[in-house]
Amino acid sequence: LEESRRWDMLRSDSTSIIVQDRRSKAYQLLTVGDARVVAGFCQEAWQGESSTILPFSPSDKKSILDTSDNWRLGDLDVAAFSYSPVPHTWEQRLLGTGKRLSQRVYLIDNATIPDSPHSATTSEDWSLVKNQIFLGVLGSLVTPRKEIENILEVFSEAGVRFVYFSPRNMRRTKELALQMGIDVAWNCAISLRPLDEGEDDPHRMTSTYADWDVNAKLPHGIDAVRQHLEEVDNVPLLVSLFTDVTKDSTQEMLKTFQEYSDTVMVMGLSHLPRNAGIFASVDLAVGTDVLSESLDMCSESVFKPNADKLLPCEVAFVSSISSHSCLFNLKGAASTSHMPFIIAQGRSALNAATSAGTFVITGCLSFSLYVLLCVCTPATTVPYIPPVGSVLYLQVVLPWIGIVIAMSDPDGQSMQRVPPKNDKAIVFGRKEGKRFYLNAVLKALPPALLPQLLYLIAFGELISAFEPELVASSCTSSSWVQLIRCDALWEYSGPARTSASSLVLAEMVLCVLASSSSFIYRSIPVWEEQPWKGNHAWLYSLALGILFVTIFLVVTLEDGTFTSLPWYFSVLALLMPLMCISFNEAVKFYDSKLEKRAVMLRRLQFETRLGMWSPK
Image 1 (spheres, helix red, strand yellow):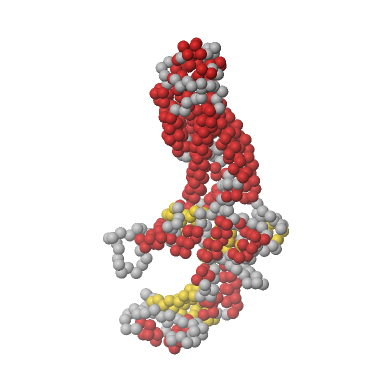
Image 2 (cartoon, helix red, strand yellow):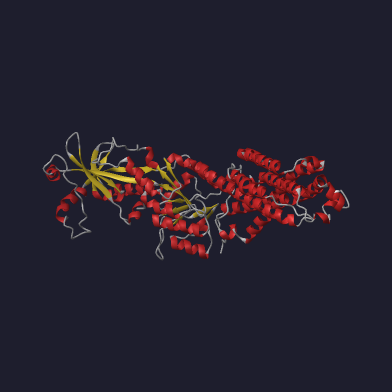
């Protein structure tokens, strides 16, 4: 019944075919279908123990129907079988003029179609169908794959809510859900089949919590779910099992998840065309081609135009068309075990790209603040901004380090955190904006501010070394503390100024390069997770950046620059990158406290089943 709802056919049915016994060359009518239908066709029953045929009593029918109903409640697919020998007098009509069945015979229920043109020819066929011998019932069970339970555990730990959509009713789906590891104890399932006013669902399950049987009823159907979300609470978004689904109701429910800011990823069979619309309507889709395990790709040498079978290439074509909206089309059911790895890599790429973008923004902000602070220098001579060094920093060094940071490996806790909802009011909200701006400004300030002190020292010492006559004639003291305030140097633009400016810009770049170590991981300190272990390319890129800075200094500095500088200038130049790292780690520590608190709150919201506003 649940499967036939997809075709808008709610009637139980059976299928009958006529086959020839190879031993006796006689013809037999074989029937398979719903137990209620097949039992209604039978007047006799085969006794397997004694191999005899006895009348099919009403008590036997009731026992068989009760057994099949119990099997269905245990999530078994039940099929009943019967047969009837075809009389010898009918063989000529069935065979026609040949030795084989020349045409299919369709048995039409002329009681429901009184004007059918086949009514005269099917009455005799129905007498054969309705006088069969009952053989027995068969119950088959579809069990989940052994790796699905481990996948669900990984998903739950990673904050990914696994939701199973089943075309079967609640009671039949419950057994399969239990085997998969889905919790069916509290707010366990919602049926997407709409109910008329006053109608009750006999398959609805009563929620059990501890020693209490809760008679609260969850909504029934898409419209009721949306009304419940608007007027009561968000429990339907926390349910892991939806039953009585069709492709339309599944698609509508997934849209409802998206409307409430959930990021929806779908896994489904790619060889079913009805899944194409579902794949196209969600954020991420992954198809699974389970037929590829048993089919070999066809070639020109084995292609037979008149072959009465489904070719492997046709199955592959249908699968590729249905999964055109999927990120991946996994081959084989066992390939679903790669889903945790795919999600982990996706999170790693997202976190690394976010860190890289944050680093580039912070680096550009550091340069902007550096230019601003150069104008605010206490020296009478404003630092010179070397154009070659600025272009090298903004167009080469900074983007290159950002690209390398985007290649970072995930941290050990990436699959243990519940991600935030895809809600713009939260991600781009005022609170998150202030937090981002504060972190960016605080991390960008030390590389822009600390090198300004080096400019004062370098300019004062270099003006004494390169322009001794100017200092002696126009300035009252030879100390760099006094020289930087000398009024005679107001319009000075000689080698002392350009060399000091190049040194300061190089120091700013070195501070930014050193600070990049704090951007590899957002909330883990560098002493707990060394950045070069999670990103080997970053270490080589850092060395390459230092090489660029060295080449820039060799090209732009005047001869004798380093010999004219005091020893404490070199000490400060080496300590400032370490000071920038320490300051960034302090900012990261404060930010990680807020992030951990947010992660704990999201974990609490993820694991609760009561609803955000329950009771209401």
